[in-house]
Length: 195
Image (cartoon, rainbow, N blue to C red; front, side, top):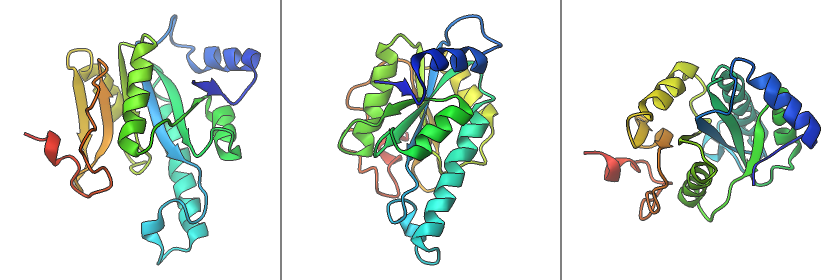
């Protein structure tokens, strides 16, 4: 269940402050998927040459960059899907600093967790939902705004990466099984979805 890192009263205050340019709830939700920057558990493919501490620091910086950039996307409600726990101090700090609402990642693997997040946010009444990762912090907020715009007329939007994965997946309707039988840890996961 989504929740913020603050009390109910301060959460409501930050929600209003975060969306000053809007008069009502957002049509869409953007869900940033992030791991806590725990040495030895993030960016392990970069070790070596980086040490586990350096890799964790890099990862934390990338998550913060995405959180900062997402502030410019005022047309969407912003959530941070956390693992291993939204109670981690890193996530609590991000929620307070960037006015993000925290939620747990639920599922046995990345595919199930993304499917669960998209389905749950669409069930909550959002007209569309986007999930994004934190590995490409150089993408501009315009990329996410364009994806949201496309979802007004398309059922699905995919942001493919050069290595065969995705940096963004957006849906307009729950799509059970969209991630079934796709090995998400392999380099060419987008092959089954490309024409």
